[in-house]
Amino acid sequence: MYTIQQLATLAGTTTRTLRHYDAVGLLVAERDANGYRRYSSHDAERLQSILLYRSLDFPLETIQALLEAEPFDRTRALEEQVTALRAKAAYFATLAETAESTLTSLRGGISMEDKSLFNGLSFDELKAHEAKHEPEVVERWGESEAYKTSRTRADKRSKEDWEALSQQQVDLVKPLVDLFTTGVPVEDPRVQAAVQANHMFINDQFYDCSLDMFSGLGQMYVMDERFTAFYDKYAPGLAVYYNDAIQHYCITQS
Image 1 (cartoon, rainbow, N blue to C red):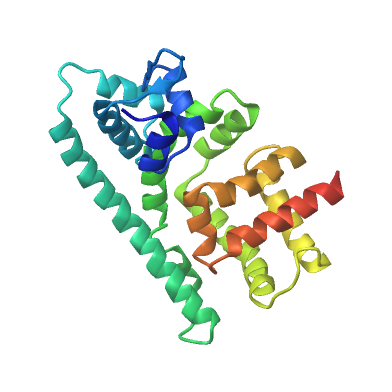
Image 2: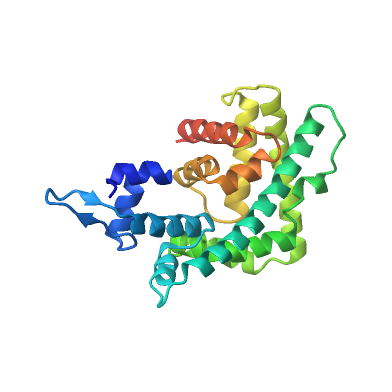
């Protein structure tokens, strides 16, 4: 039997996560005479399945339905997870190659065309990626006005519109890349002007983005590996730099 701390350490997760899984009925622990949670080897196997599905961005409700389906075929589930994880790994490998090529360019190697900045992030690939993660997005933000506004605007855009927005985003990120790679501090007016331009871009093109929301976006850029990968493809460490700049901007603008 494992204590909650022992299982969290074994699985590389947190006790807070395990308590949440217990509370929602996804991984219910037995209780000893003192009321402490105790986990069996079977619980550890179930936790592995949960964490593998979470790594594939499955919502908790979907994971619970899959695990409680009768009968649950763990062998088949693992085979499917291996296939999906390899596909995801290949996707991030493409992003890594793009980031590496960009880094080589920034260090004075072979120059890259703007289009090359989006290897692995073409319109069709982005739409497929968006569709894959739509359930998670709806789960987290579906009831918010920001999501509804963004969805309404998105539905009206053509492929050409999206490509134009992608180019605008490249143009807005470029100054941040240059400032970051030359070591300009985030408090510098040039950095803050670049941050403001990005804030206005989100506000004008996607949804009304308050300072609190913009601050939350900045934090997401460093907490969610997908956002971190997007910015760090331009220069490793850019996501952290951008978040720090956003937090300074939000404080000074409030």
